[in-house]
Each structure stands twice: as C-alpha cells, then as structure tokens.
Image 1 (tube, rainbow, N blue to C red):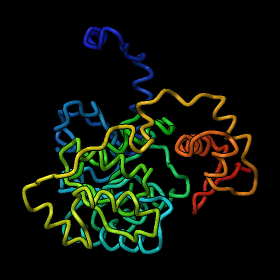
Image 2: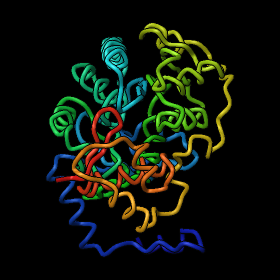
Image 3: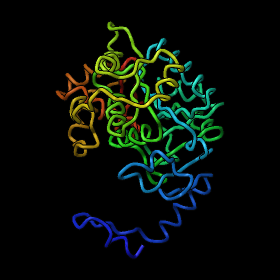
Image 4: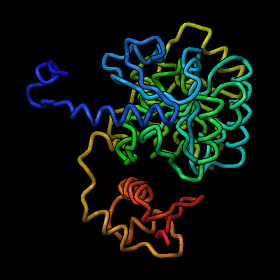
Length: 326
C-alpha cells in the first residue's frame, strides 16, 4: 500500500483509498458471498492471466472452478430473432454437455439465452458493473440462478453502477476467458463485432453463425465469415475448430470501424444526454428517429440510451425502440 504511488505512471499517480474504505468493500463482498482474487492466485482464470495487462483483481460470485475449465464465449444481438435465440440455446446446451463453460455478458437476447441454456452444465456471466449490480434489471432472476449454479465475474468495485464505457472493457474479459468466441447475429454496427475484434487481438478463435442476407441483424456476422471466420452450424463445429491448431486468416478491423469504441472516447457530454432525453416521450420510438430528432449519430444515441437506462431515466425495448422511463 505504501509503495503503490511510486509504482504507478508518473503522469497518473494512484493513491490508495483509506484503509476503512477498503475494509468496508471487503466486508460487503464477503457478505454477498463473493471473493476477490488477484492475477497470481489459483482461482484467477488461466487464459485471462496470459494478457500483457490482465485485470489486477476480479470479484467472483459462484463456482469459481468453472473458469478453470475450457470456455467458449457466445455473444450476439440483443434484439435477436427467434431463430437466433433457438440456435443460441441449442449451441450453449450442447457445449455445456460437452464439458465447456459457456461465457457471455448477461445482456438481453443471445447472451441471456446462452446463459439460461447452460445453467445446469456451467455458465459464466461477466458483468459491466460491480458484482452486485444487475443489468439489465429484467435479468434479476437469471443473475440469481447464475450466482447459485454458475459464476459471476466483475473487474469493477463493489457498488459500481455500469456506464456505457464499461461494456467494451467487459467484452475483453468475456473473450479473454475463452478459447474462442461465437458470434450469433451481429449487425454492421454492433458491440458483438467489438468482441470479435478483441478476440482477434487476443489470438482467440473467431467463429460465426451464418444468417439470412436479408436480415440486417446478420450483416456483421456474415461479413466475418466472408473475411475468414470459422463457420458454425452447431456445437460440433465449435469443438472441431478448437481441437485443431488455430490459423486465423481475418484481420482485426481498425478501432473506429464499427463506431462503438466507447472506451476510447471521452465521457459523453451532458448536453448530448439532455438532447436525447428531450426527444424521448412515453411512446417508444426507434433509435433512428431519436438520432434524427436529436441530430446525433445512431451509434452515439445507442450509447447515450445505455447511460440513460442505467440511470433509470429511459427504457429500451425489443425491436430497437426506446422511451422515457415513467
């Protein structure tokens, strides 16, 4: 603790918080039934430890041994189709039965289906907020089931409420824990494609489920296939891909290609938040309409809506709709 300030970057000195604050956090984590592990401890996920700069500590709630098994990440659209949801359930169930831990981000759509289908065999949810912050709130029961039968992971402090900037950081942990990542329905401007890029940077196997060329939800995942990602029809394709030496042909896209690299941007200005909030009403409208009315880009509006929903001022719905929170 005393040496910490001298060990940090000269341009960004880090001073430890008061001992009493540290003790309060440790007590709160313990009362929840969770525990904190560092990179040098046995329960730290082994593949994640291989990062050049792994998260220094993680908070774990549930069965920590699940992160020691072979893991596969399943991610995809929040506004997923019925077919995409069915595929996510089948693939997650079969991977779980084959002895893999299924990793995802507890989001709506593909993430939620993957977690629910692999609960009995082992599922890992990586959170954007603290270990005690449930987002989206509609997944409170799923969160409780994963805490009981699976594993919840967070790199953020106890009590931290997630912001839009936390989710791209969360994605690097999802892919870092796993040997490979499977994309199921990803639009051209999609957070799932950030996960694909991150996986490439981590030398993980990138796999994608093909979708209809008429469905914009599959435009990004289909393009990954065209660029060399492994085509996946079912869990057997994933097991086969992970059993052979990885020869990754696709190149990691530049950071700005998908327009969602929130972690590299400045904080969202308050006036932009106000502009989006001012055009919302009780009737749900599309993000495209919100972007047009607020004169902001669609990707920026999507990020702002995440922040507004996290703060309880807006609500989002299936189909890409949003309204003010009543």
